[in-house]
Image 1: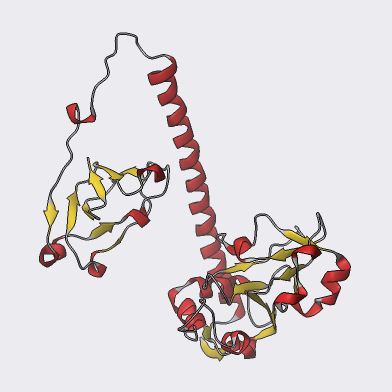
Image 2 (image 1 turned 180 degrees about the vertical axis):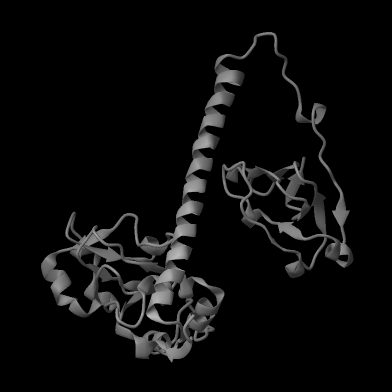
Length: 295
C-alpha cells in the first residue's frame, strides 16, 4: 500500500462552482426537454442524480455556463437538505445545470478518483468535514459554500488504490441494491399469494377472528439503567414502509429513555400513524421504541 497524504480539496480537485442566483432561473424558463436542472430532489438517490428533471433551453444553459456540470462531476446541496451528494452518470445527458441550492466540483483525473471522493463524502468523516461550517440560524445552509468545500481535508492514497477502494465499495453497493430489489420482488409475490389464499380463494367455512386469539402483545419494558443488557435498538425510523424485512437498527448507547423488549422472530408494529404500514419481522433480539407494539 502507498502512503496516504493529507490534502486540501482545493489542491486535488479541478473546478468548483455554485448554482446561479435565484433570479437567473425562473419557472417560466422551464421547457419540456433540453438541458436538465439538478435540484435537491434529484440528489435523493444512493449514488447518481436521478428522478424527474426540469429542463432549460440550450441558450439559457449557455447563459449559465459557470453553473454547468458534466458526467463524472460531484454535486452537493449547500442549502436546504444538507449532506446530499451524488455523481453525474455517464450516458444520460451530455451536460446539466446545478440549481440555486447546489454546487459542483470536477476532479483532477490524474490525482483524484471521483468515485473515491463520492464515498469519502458519504462517510461520517467526509460528511462532518462538509458540514463543519453549517450555519446555526435560519434555513439549513453551509456558510460560504465554495470556500467551505475547498477547505475540506482529505487523506488520499495513490490513484490506483483510490480506484481499487472505490471499486470494492461500488461492488458492495450493487450487491445491496440487488438484494433490496429481490426482497421487493419476494414481498410482492407474498402479497399476491396472500390475496389469492385469503381473499380470492378463501374457504367459505373459515371464520373471522381477532388477532388476540392467535397472538400476544408483549409488554416487557426495560428501564434506562438496564439498557446495557441489550445490543440492538429499533425505532420507527428503522422500519421501512410496507416492508416485512428489517434492514437497519440503531445503537443502544444512544438511548436515554425506557423501551420495550422484543425477541428474534417477533413482529414489530408501528402504532404511531399506523397508515404508514410499518410492520416487520425481527431477525434479531433487542429493544424498541414504545411507539412500537411487540407481537
